[in-house]
Length: 382
Image (tube, rainbow, N blue to C red; front, side, top):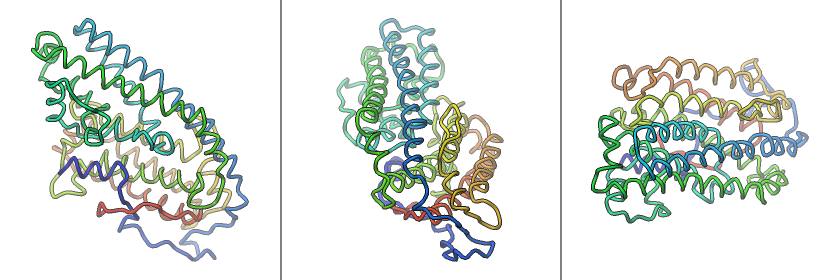
């Protein structure tokens, strides 16, 4: 049941506005309380925005991520050829580097990534331990099937690298002396290879053709690149970041907390780190910046061009301030979200609330200012 709920939340079935989101304020005359957009969306340079998104943020993010996935695959193959504790440590280090870097491409679920089911194949959690155990014992599986998304990707590797036993010596035994050692190694290699192969596929498709068509589609309509990706951006922030990393494990959508649903469950020390990476990537994109900074066109410059005011302040400033408040709340949490939920779930819920406040600013106020309609339906009851 948990697995199905997470799949619904993160892979894009029907979704819509949060029930706690206020109705859009259609008073564009501006009384100091709602949005007061003084500009015209049609006169904003949409081509420059799409060019910055593509050439300075999205494609470079894939270009940066691909060699990291190649390094991970190489270290896994070296470990499979000669498994020892040093090799296990190297695989773990490369896995974490790749998992962190993935947070900077995870939001770009459009075009090639959407076609490849990229995000759900690389990061559906919690991992299905029973299915993984079945696959590695049988040495027969088809990871192309949609039903196997929670038996692959970074969460499955998390289980294979940290969750097979309680200590490193016993974990290593699964790859050396265990009766299924060869199968276990092959499965680990397959998982790393899929991450690299899918990343190569998505990067290559962006560079070969999708980037050009994405930049050229400047239409101010539901089929235009800006409208479509804005919805994808909001979906990622609301469902993958806010709900997936915080709301679901903290129990926002269930009777009780579900600590076993945290990202990085078996490693136990990286949940906060991954969440902070994802938050920074999201804020950078809002501001039109890539991972290494920059100052290009983004949602911020679009809103500023329109002179979008809420409660007497620039909407872009309010959104950035709320990103910063969410970061403060997350930084106050335990590195291990399982410990956080079990010892003080209130703090976890407070971090969720700070993230939720930006859902309202982005999904309601920003979309109204940009004259973009929500194209997904929300069924999570938030």
